[in-house]
Image 1: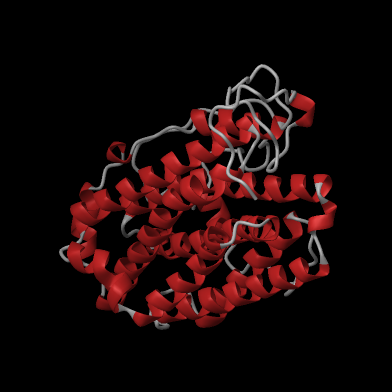
Image 2: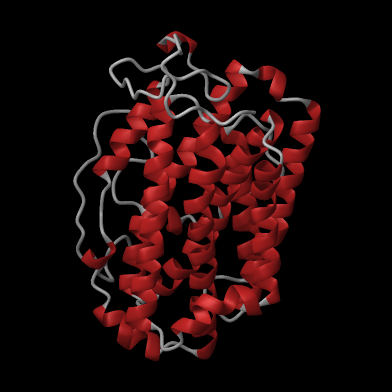
Length: 340
């Protein structure tokens, strides 16, 4: 694949000839005529979701953190370190690896917006670390020192590196699936631990911050699921048996990595998150993501912690994603009675 030209006055491409990649865009964002309506709808949802980390009250979490058990502190710190890595990776990956090859301006819009949101999430974690933790430097260096975390990070980054080194159509589609896994499995798993603490009345400010972040991640997940489904309709030739085998292998590997990581950080000492629950939840997420892009489920398991879905919600955005506007939401702190 070739990177798109940022200014291309010789192009005569009209809206009907736009392509997700491989098109010939002028470089002008003509948004009164769009081909991918889902992308523009998503753009408006993202704008309506705008928030800023310092609006979340972290005061009580400072006290709560000091009173966490040692196991809870370790899991909290390692979860933060993992989330910091993934948002850092995504901020650069979207701008440097994915967006340069996308030739539909309405999709360029939402990729740039997503990159901004990933950077905002990095600021959110910085606020959490600065407000709460007494070992901020250690949290930011954990990706170098913890071999379990480093191995997981290396595996996540591998598909993105493959696209960077060899930008083919096949590798681009694989990278879309890798983004779906990152946004829809790895992030969700990390959020669940912090919600579990909040469910027991601890670290409510952290949980509120994560709710804002996860609301963004819902749109990021929808972005790549729509990209995959649009490509399946436009370029069915790309969805070869080889690609399908590689995608299934990616999902199976992601489930193993994330289940092992979840068990590693909780060590069976976090109330409500047994090893079996952790693994079943990861498998449930994988099935849900596969099903959303036309693949058969691999595990056929139920969600063992359904309370997480209710806890993470602000409104009905997830259900009514492409209908109307997002309802208003409160940026206030999360009270212990919310969603229980």
